[in-house]
Amino acid sequence: MQVGVREVLAALIVSIAVALLPGIGGTPAGAQAPIAEGPNQPILFSHKIHAGDFKIDCQYCHADARRSTFAGIPSVKRCMGCHQIVASKDAELQKEVEKLRGYWKDARPIEWVRVHKLAGFVYFPHKRHIQVGLACQQCHGEVQAMTQLAQVAPLTMGWCVSCHAERKGPLDCVMCHH
Image (tube, rainbow, N blue to C red; front, side):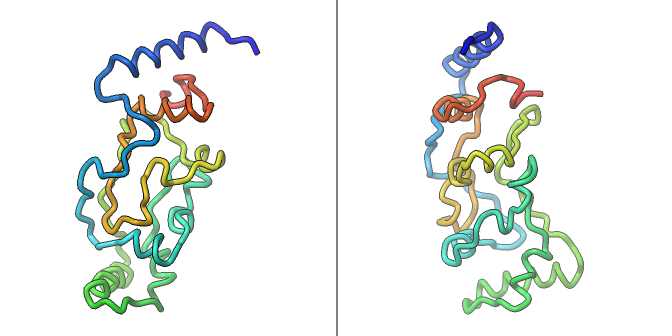
């Protein structure tokens, strides 16, 4: 396979950027410890209970991940699909279920606080990553063990490029920067 000048230049630029620019490095295996504490949310939602204890697949709630750029946040309707009939035996957790039911009754969306953020100039299609079999945990950490969701991977250019290089993914700049 013949490598073009554009590919060589792109690889060189990325290599130099990863080596020299502060804050963009990292390895795709990223630390599993939170980079920062997760934000307080309008409802105390535990991924540990839903994805861990009950083994609900990520894509059941984040259904857009397999077909869109964005994974999406589940609607109140999606949550109520279970919580119309499912309650918690724990009194404190039941208070959170009641908050959810209040949003449903008032026909209001839950205003979740975003946890995972990328720069505005970065194009990240969840769909492509799901299609090649990348587990959600690779970027989001062991979500099924988190009571409070927090970002664990730096999600920097260097971190992503390292993952692409390791898995022989595309390294062309325009794949992520439009």
